[in-house]
Image (cartoon, rainbow, N blue to C red; front, top):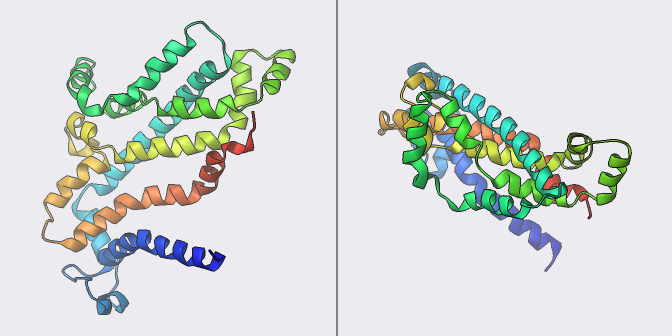
Length: 270
């Protein structure tokens, strides 16, 4: 198949995926009550304005919810990456007798859906007096073992010669993690960090149950409340949805180079 045919197919697929985003953005910039269902509505840009955004920000706490989501997402990502990388280093480079057993136990957490542990999780959070607190969302988010699973695969690719050379230079376990494995898996950790951030940003069920006040809600839990009050206004719904989608899109665009490097395992060969 010719290269230009593949390029055309790729362009068509890209348009297919970007079309809903463009439609959402266009509807959000149209005056309230204006539909965007015909070609004439698409090409008529004279009525585009930001009044809907001003109204959504003024009549709701969406900026507060967005800030809460950002704080929780960043804290969850940073702490989870730190713990996951340390655990992955231990399972990958430190020999101990029960390493395989503990690794299986941790990774098996992927088989347990969040819905199955909601009741004990809520009772534990209530006992710790963390209900309606951002740490009620952050701490359960740190238990996702996907970071350990992925980072271990990357650290397995770090050549053993590097570890032995660092040990000869006097580096102990923490030094091996900090000076050898951490720099060589930086792109992988960025990729896993993006995954953690998106999981935190899109988390709905547990934040909806654990947060009771409007000012402490995150965007994914507060947005349905706003949408239920504006069911008759498609423009307002698309405006709020655009505000919710923009941060993750920006994060992906800024860090896409690291995602590609992470997928290629940073060029490390074992």
